[in-house]
Length: 126
Image (tube, rainbow, N blue to C red; front, top):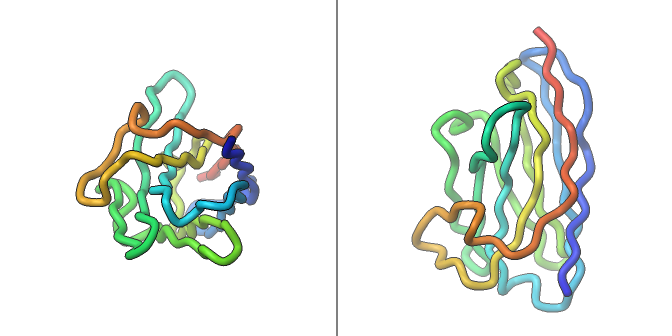
């Protein structure tokens, strides 16, 4: 069983930065494609960023491209999301997810991921 635990959320002013972390249990971390998703109140969960296991191929949603950076430390079983130039519209619960079946050549949706963390709140004030 794979468990994911996020941390690093909080309240920040517009233009500020936050770094989210996701600790992943399990011995086969490099096998998983890792993703970050977010869900704002009254909205559906949306894709934010994705990183593959071995080559660390990355994808980003257009809304965060150039501002967010996803990375992973395979030795520590960690995934990170560095969020810069934050905007009020980035306010949401951010969750990390792991997929053992997603191919690194495409962007996965929520249904492609079988393991999820509990989420961490990010609030950006104007």
